[in-house]
Length: 343
Image (cartoon, rainbow, N blue to C red; front, top):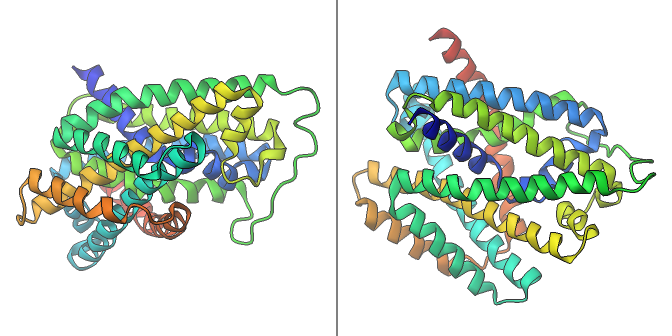
């Protein structure tokens, strides 16, 4: 039972962080690969921080008996600022979920040639099914989908690293960034950028992740995220011509043939589903805690609210949501370390 919990928590951690931006290679490109080989050192730093903070978050949740993310925010930031953080995150969760469903529609249209609404409807159905079974459903579907993502993503990226002919890794240009000029700072910002969503998902699962083996799962999940990012970063450095593309890992997979490219698009779709499930469960749990709707009613209301507006452009939503999660994470990261050390 302990190892089952460890595996489920690790898979949920990876699922919360490894969204479409991660699997596409875009986040790894922006935060790590732009620094050349020093960026891979940044990946190792981020993996250590993910493991450490994941353990700290679950430890504090168990000590404080947290069952929802508003409770966690109030403990970390106090009553006034905690409520502000709760309101901001609730909006961001909705927009983030909308971004993933919208992105799945764009994926089906651009890469499979199917109707955009077919992708939206299919993705929405999978998300609704997972949400219907509550916390166990979220843990279970992550336990199924994350290993598939792991196998596809890690396998294709690893083959790409060794597939490159001599000279492909030469002449790598380190892209300038006026905001972040050092690889170590970029690694810290990347963790803060992803920390908020992971914290929200863990807090919403409440007692489902307050079991023996859960904290070890956070450490394993942090290590798995580091492994994912390291291999993707190495693949990007082996194919510097892909740096600057919107979905660089699909371009790399395409160098291996049509089937690897197809499989990697499937990875992106799975990444969108798991990220949307994490957002959706946290949001439904928040509505239920308010006492205004029951769980089934809140799930149905959320899906009915999302689907009509799911045609909004994916890239515009991502540009809005991701920076705000990053700014909030910069506040939460030191607070988690402070209270964990104090406890």
